[in-house]
Image (cartoon, rainbow, N blue to C red):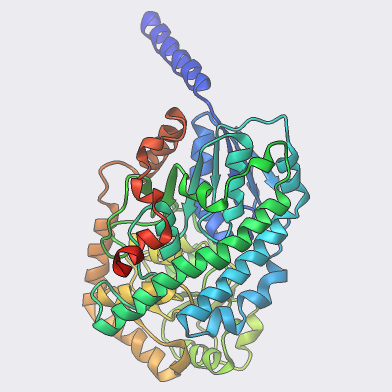
Length: 487
């Protein structure tokens, strides 16, 4: 017995020594105030720390309780300063694909400028003592200049994408580009294909000539360190990213080819559902008719909508026989409405709420994270898309029969009540989303193990350049076949 125990202890000690020998220093750059983005990736950072790596995370959202091997560098959260810009007509209510994309670019340039000025970020740029074996950064969503940390620390870079690929992002990954900003599905009419074609060219060509040039200017202005005079062009740095982690799953979105340098990680944050607070658990347990949960995500509040939209939604909620959990910053918005059936809070543990068996319907703006959680927990949806990929997600939800979509610009109380009634009382929606949930959960290995394997693979193979597709050596006009067309 003692001999067996000694062998087990010896094996554990050997594994620990091997683990320590392979431990890497990893820098995670997510300094932007996108809480849903950061929180959605946090399980990966924590798991890397749990497996013995030394992880340094730069973000406005530190751990609530200390995590061994994980160090938080806390930067200011400037979300309040940006709130007017985030919910401006250009960002929220603009219908045009092209003008919306331009607004998003300008928003990203403003955010990056602020982030690069932080003392904590500048201290890292000037740091000559630290050594990092890997950089993980959300460079694919408006934060391209952080790719320079790979050059500074002579380390491979892994990019994070919290949505479908934008055309420019797919282009710089050597991957197929999508329709993620449009309302189109994967079977388009001629006119839809023409619009989609024009949008893809706009994002790739104008994105290269205008947006990336501005981001490169910011990179060169703020990244000053020994050797920074040899910084390659930002486009070249992005083309040499070792790996991209993308929030996708076979159950969400249309089938699309991905190169070997892209690893999906959709659903990584919903598998371990936290416990509901006792008071909220009691509300859900006692809601015999069921609960409807309404949230427009971590950035948008119902108060950012036009008054007629707010009125339509709040009037409808007061007429429902179901208990309604309403995410809103201030309960005073209900003072002119019937609200006996409503519980208003500025935050709900969303995944835990959707996981409760009494949660019957999710009214959402169609953000990627909410879509992932709803499909995983098999809760059908009524979608009111606001901007960006939410229109694309809404189209997918309707096409697959897992929910119903309403246009925010023409919403009325009657239309919302009709949509709620349709989804709740037509069993097809529940059946379809159960099928999707089953597909979502049917994975050959746990998603977390899959993601960590590939992150460590990049470390082991010093950037894994063999995963890089040759298409990345083409200029944008060659990639778009403009030279061949001209010939």
